[in-house]
Length: 174
Image 1 (cartoon, helix red, strand yellow):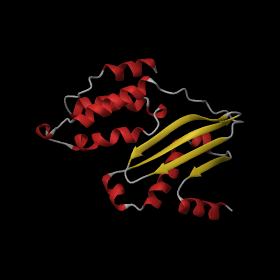
Image 2 (image 1 turned 180 degrees about the vertical axis):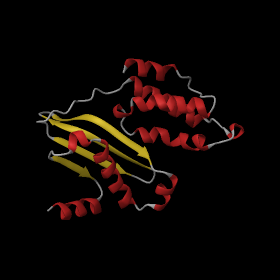
Image 3 (image 1 turned 135 degrees about the vertical axis):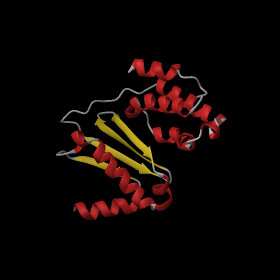
């Protein structure tokens, strides 16, 4: 992982064009399982990634700030626990207007340790059209889809903050 962190750190704070930004974000994605709420950092780059014409490319201070934040986060990546068969696992999911996120944790004698992070931005259509309940369910579904090796055929705890999702799951699973 050190070579990925080094590569991220070697990018300039101001990226020159769409391809340069795509390269930077591509390398950052390699560290994605270590980065809590990666989608939050990526959000401000979305308009730049959509630009087809290079003449419309407009790098702003917020983009420089996000590159610096990502470099800082990547230079201090957390150690992730490796779940064992006997571990009690907890999945936390959340969604808001523009993104979803999930974390896989394992219970320890002193609390919980993170094992994996995941999350993404919603597409513009999803962000605009979907109700928050659908976004929250989507986060749960994506977490299950992302970590089948850890979650299939195993009991685990799912933690969601949306009362409608909680009620639905409680009624369906009883």
